[in-house]
Image 1 (cartoon, rainbow, N blue to C red):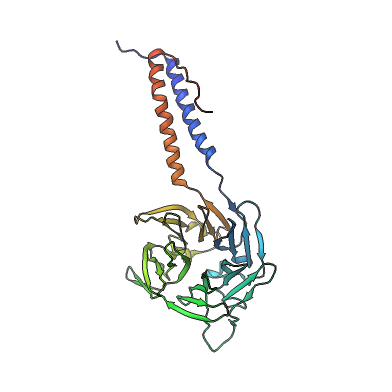
Image 2: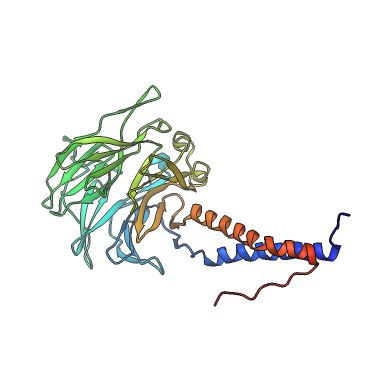
Length: 371
């Protein structure tokens, strides 16, 4: 005769399973570290790790360079950079400091985009002082082309030469410490889906192999998957290393050589056409990872105008220009795997107990083996 456990026993088993799974979920959640976030910023753009484990933040809409220790309030290194609160796309974005990097005891920063006094310039800043223009160009002067038009990001070599991406001229500039500007190279237009679009260089960084890597945003209509990443070697040879991105704004390499890229929006044409401060979140961007194997993974989506990515001691941070924040991106995939493993372990651990309860009508937990 088939034996059916008594109802109280079945109910007890169900309660035990539910309690154990809930405990497993709670355990994983309690072990997940809290993620750092800095809000209330005005058009944050460039992010650069500092030597002591913090972040430099270029707050374009406030003309400020901040240093954040990832815990409390940021330190204002300078609030004297020129800026315009309403500029750029549809007059809905800000124009000001776009990126900064430390160099020795000083900082180099670029201010671009607007044709306004003090813009379109490379600056040098020392602590306790005002930023000083390196080239001294007058953007309001007429009659000759400006050597710098829209500097977006920079990387500084050991000799103090600043390599600056100029998205307005589709070029990579080399600016010496004395202010000489050299057009190092001009990026050719990109053909994608029958469209020929401008390159629009954005992020720049040195890769683990010593090469200099540059991301491209691409121009109107910003075709999906048209953005690429170039590599520049010591001999000035430019090669296309990565493809298949959309509206790429910045890049960074992880310890294992994987590439992280921020995409400003996955619907860039719609964003540009419909942009208002209130609607920016309707056309979000994302952070993607390109592994050494070539596989692409979405690390985070729903980002509101992501402009930069930086890695600080293995922790990933992004800035969101239209979101007004800098935030840490957690290892969501790893956390999901950990959660699944915990649940499976919990269920596996209960298998013997459930079988015992079904046969004997009772279950006595073993003493805990954890200290």
